[in-house]
Length: 160
Image (cartoon, rainbow, N blue to C red; front, side):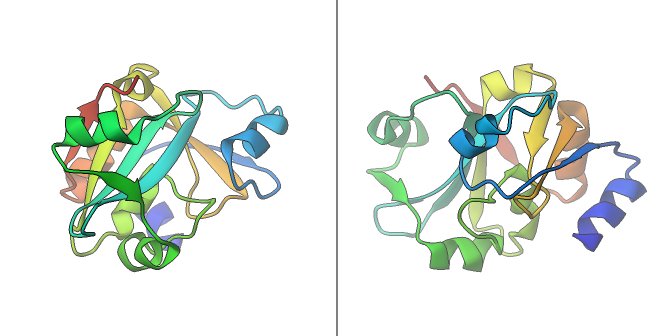
């Protein structure tokens, strides 16, 4: 997390920080009734059928995802949730704490990042900073600058 904070400081990216008890899913996070600004998200680490392609999908927390529809949108045969081992290998993360910021840990550029258009329209996004005991609110323009600085591509995807 020190690297992340140093990078944000270098780029003059301001975040609003909220500490809280550990949460492992959106229902637990919502039950805390915290007044955190920005789009609440769920972050899904997916793989294609053969495990050759990996995806980090950031969508609004209230949306229900149809993996078959998403597979067509991503032009892959099928999608499934990737294993904890793959999550640790590619994003150096664990289930229950994955967020948009974890893409910074993908040293091999093996994970494609897709962001729900509705999340981006909120102008402020909630992210876990490598721990599920804190939530940060970060502006989408700052996220864009951060991802550009580390040369990470992302695409918007309309998720129904």
